[in-house]
Image (cartoon, rainbow, N blue to C red; front, side, top):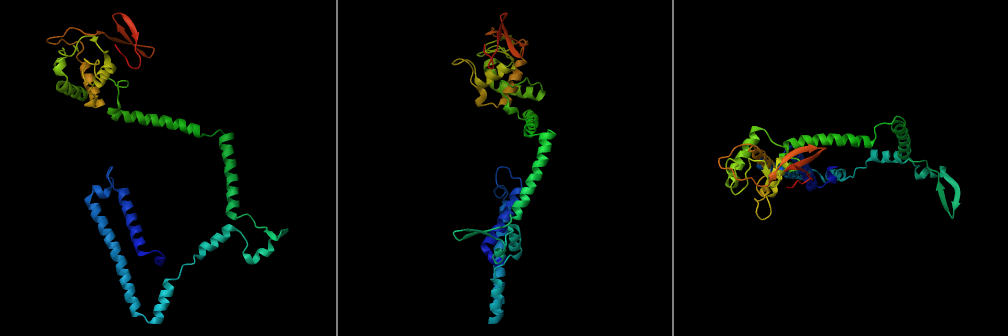
Length: 314
C-alpha cells in the first residue's frame, strides 16, 4: 500500500489530519488556532519537518538496502515492492453482492428467447437489492402501526415541541442579552447596579440640558407629570434612542449608547418623578398617566383618553 501513495501525499495527509485535530480541540475563538497561538504554529512546523525527515530517512535506508543486494535479489525485491495488491476479499465480496453467474456458467441460465441473435440471461436479483427490499417492507409495517394505527408522535408534534423549547431558550438568552432590548420590550430596571450606571450616564451626557436634579434647563423638566413625547419607560427609552422633536429636540443617543445603557438611563430618569428640584422649569407638554386597558396602553391627557399604537406619540 505504501508504494501506491507518493511520499508527498502521505506527508500532506498526515499533516492535515494533525492540523484538523488541533483546530478541533483548541478553542481559539474566531481566529484559527495556528494564528492565535504561536506555539501551535511552531508545533505544526516541527511536525511537517519531522514527517519530511522520516520520508527522507526511509528512502535513504531503501537505497542502502538496494546497494547491498545482488542483481537477482534486487530484481526480486523491486518486483515484490511494485506488485499491485489484488484486493481479493473485496473482489469476492463484490461478486457475492452482485449475485450473478460467472461467464463460464452463463449457459445454465440462458433463456430460449432469441431477438435477432440477442439472447437473455435469467439472473437472480442481486442480494443487496433483494435484502434492501425486504428491509423496506419490514420498516413500512412498523411505520404503519406506529403512526397510522397507534397515532405516534409525528413530525408536526416534534416541531411544536421544538418551538416550545426554542422559545424557552430564547427567553433565557434574552435575560443575558440586554442589548437586544428596544422601546417595545424594555422594562423598568430596579437593580442598584443598573440605576447607578444610569445615573453615571445621565451625569455625563444629560445634566447640561436637564440639570443634575432633573429640573430642566435647555431641556424639559423631568420631575413633573408633563411630557412632550410621552412618559413611561417605553416612551422615554424611544425618545433617548431616537431623539426629540425634529429640528429642536435632543440628538438621537443610539449612535453613542448601547440599548442596555439607554434602558439604564431611562430607568434612572423615571426616578425624578415626584421629586422637587432646586429650580424647576415650567411644565411642557401634556400630563401623561398610563393605564392598561384590554391589553393596550391608554394615555390620559387632560381627562381625555387616547389609545396608544405600537409607537406611542404625544
